[in-house]
Image 1 (tube, rainbow, N blue to C red):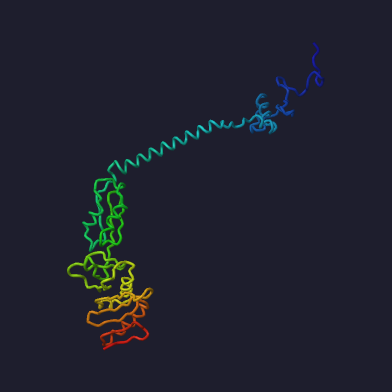
Image 2: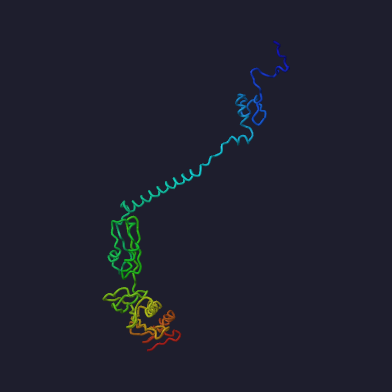
Length: 313
C-alpha cells in the first residue's frame, strides 16, 4: 500500500514500463548490453531480447565455436577397399566393351575390308608376279593381312631388291617394290646372268643381253656377293667415269697367286684396246690417269702403277 518513491531501491527513475533487464551474460562470462539498438541494423530499430542474446552467444570465444564444429568422419579401411575394387571392376568392364567394339569394327563390320591391292616400282619385274607372290585376297579384314609374310614372299622374286607391304586404310594394301639393277653380266653354271651392284647373279639374261660389261672370273671362279674376284670387278666399275665405263666390254679378274695377295684385273674396251689395271687398290687414282691416257693413240694402257703409266702403240 506504500507507493514507491522515485530514486529509492524500489525502482529506477529511468526504467520504462514493460522493459526487462538490459544485460545478458554470455557463456564466457561477459556481460552484454542487449538493451541498446542492434549495431548491425542501420535503421536503429531495437531487436528482440532473444535475438540479441543469440547474437551475443554467437560472438563468443573461438574455442567455443571450434568445439561445436563437427569433425569429418573417414570411412573404415574395408569400405575404402571395397570402393576401390568396385571402381576397378567398372574400368575393366568399360575397357572390355571398348575393345569388343573396336574388334567388331575391324573384323566383323566390313568397314575396313581389303578392296584393292596396289603395286608400285615395277619396271623389269612383272606386276602380276608380285601380286601372285603377295597372295593377298580381297574381301577379308585389312587388319588381318600378314604384311611380313607377304614381304618375304615378294622379296624371293629374282628381280626384287627390297619391298614394303603397308596398309592404306580403310580398304587398300600398298606394295612398293625396289628392283635390282644390273651393272654387269657374268657366265655362271646357269648361263649368262644379270649381276647387280652387290655381286649377286639374280636373273638369267635375255636372249639379247643389255650392253653391260662382262665379268670373267675364270673356270674355277665364282660370281657371288663377297667373293674376292667379284668384289674386285665391282670396285673397278665403281671407280671408272661414265664415259670410260661405257667403253668396257670385258673385266677379266685373275685370282690371287698366293694367300694374302690381291687379284689382278685387265679390261677389254669395245674398240679392241686393252687396259692393264693391276690390283684393285688406288682405284680413283688409276681411273683418273686412264681417262687422260685414252685421249692418246695406243693399244695397251698400263695404269698398274698410276704414277708411272705407259702406253703401248
